[in-house]
Length: 64
Image 1 (cartoon, helix red, strand yellow):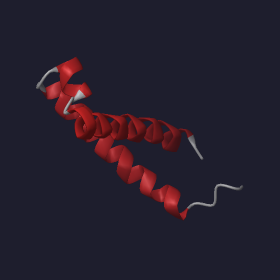
Image 2 (cartoon, one colour):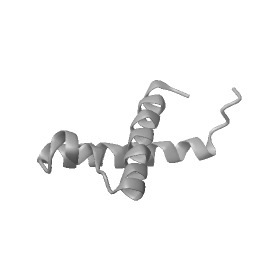
Image 3 (spheres, one colour):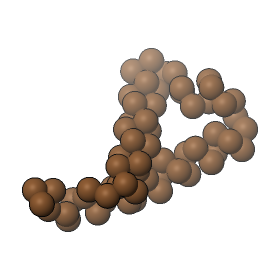
């Protein structure tokens, strides 16, 4: 796993935790920290791109 994939995985985990908080407690961590500004939209875009990058992990042999 290279550095870009590890960084993408961290952002994907952050996004997953945020979605879990929204589902369980109706609490959006990103919006509570950054508000409904352009910065929170950028964070959502980064998390989305990270998810796309992590699709490659499905097709990568991690035992190498």
